[in-house]
Length: 91
Image (tube, rainbow, N blue to C red):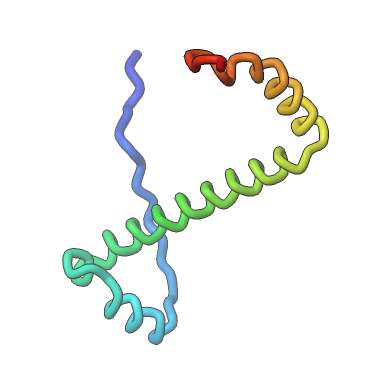
């Protein structure tokens, strides 16, 4: 039995402040100004991508501050320090 891979569209109604609508109308690229549906989709995708990036950066910062991770990185760096000069002449 095959499952449908068609994406489901969910409709939402939102109330937007007039000042926001005016600002978005002025800032939107020409190809999106006349199509609010596409403009909202693009804006929400950009927002989601930005939130994912911020979450990733936060997780990386937490890892960098973790003493256990720092200790493991120091061990790895020490173990590979022998290879730092591979391919270079030792004079």
